[in-house]
Length: 220
Image (cartoon, rainbow, N blue to C red; front, side):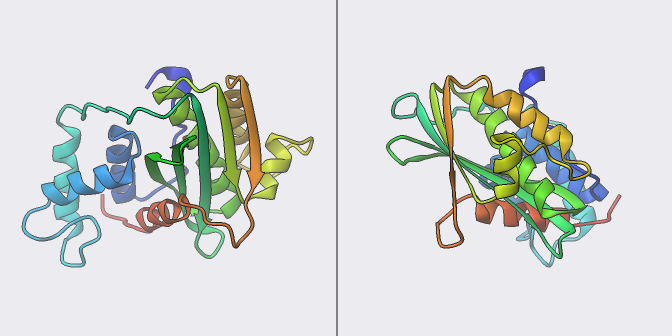
C-alpha cells in the first residue's frame, strides 16, 4: 500500500490474532480470500476456525503464507466511477473482542470487495466503527478512482464527528476519525446515509468475522 493510503494498525491483539491480521493485510483485507489461503495451508481438514486445528498448526500455516510473495490483486471492474461503501463495527461485551467490516459496491449494486479485520482484543464499539470507516475509505481509494461515494453507516457517533461539528471525545478514536476525515477530502463528491437497525448491512458479517479473529489467542 502507498503510505498515505495505509490502513491504520489495529489495537492490541493476541499474537495469534495479530498473525491473522497480517495475513488479512497481505490479501487486501479480503476476508474470504485470506480464510481460504489459511485453510489451504493448514494440514488435514482443519482451518482458521476449525475446532480440531491447534494454535501451533495455525501459527505454522500463517507463517508459511507470510514468507511467500503476496497475491496479485485484481479488483473487479466497476460499473461507472460512483460507489457505495457499507461499513460496520462490532465489539462483544463492549469493550471486548472487536472487528470491523467494509463492503464496496458499484452503482449497479454489484459487490466488488468484501473486507474484514480484527480491531482489538479489548476495544469498544465506537472504535470499531471508526476503524471500519477508515478501512473502507483507504481500500476504496487504493483500488479505484472514485468520483462519487455514498457511505452507508449505522453509527451516529461517527456521523456526527466526521461529517458534523462534534469532534470525537472517545479515547483512542482520534487517529481513526482524523484519518477517515482526511480520506474523505480526496473524494470529489461524497455523502452519507444513516442505516437503522432494520436496514441490511453486508458489512455486519465481516465485522463479526473480525471480532471472531480478535477473540483468538493468545498463542505466541
